[in-house]
Amino acid sequence: MSVVAPLRSALASALLTALVDRGWPAEPGAVCSREVAWRGRYVVVTDDDIDTVHLDVPTVLGRPGVVVVTSVQALSSLVPLVDRGALVLDRAAPFLVLLGLVELGLAGRCRNDSEAVRRRAAEHCALATLTDAERVTLRSLAAGLSAATIATGSHHSVHTVRSHIRSILVKLGVQSQLAAVAVARRAGPEWDASNTLHIATFGDVRP
Image (cartoon, rainbow, N blue to C red; front, side):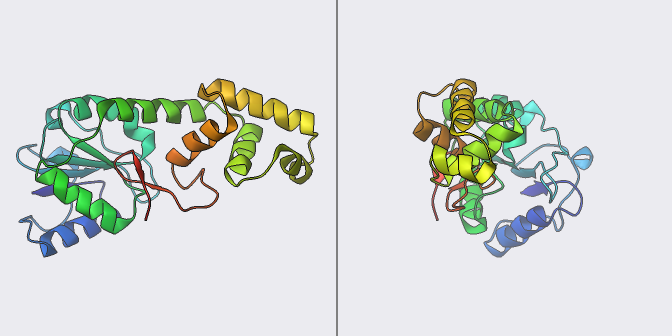
């Protein structure tokens, strides 16, 4: 088993140490992708410690026994790997949850739902189209605030806030504020004002 990651990735080092402690045989240290033969079991961490995507994962890794730990920013490019059997996990998940799922993935005992991954990637792309004002409004809705309260706090009229909400619904392709909040919360802690929802297999996991 090998861990492949950007150099000096703290998450990759932590995963490698924990996996070795749990009995997985591995070479010490995370390595960079250009040094890899891509044979056997792999854990691939695509992002550095500030969620900048550095590694392009070859399609040959789309098979059981391969786990890709990534941010939602890279998700759309990884759908072909999911289709071929690799397990894609969200690096924002609590570490112990992530570690357990990595072990299941290395053993070939856990897979993503391809359609769910496609939906999550599409949701991320839709969220990226929101304006700054719409992003603030959506975060406020996720915090449980009403349009009137949002208007007071943002110094906008209620009419303007409701206009933002209508635009959000159109861009996210949903019919209600509750559905829009659900999309935001699935996107991770950045959007979830309560910070109680975490993503692991790009499906919802609560601690």
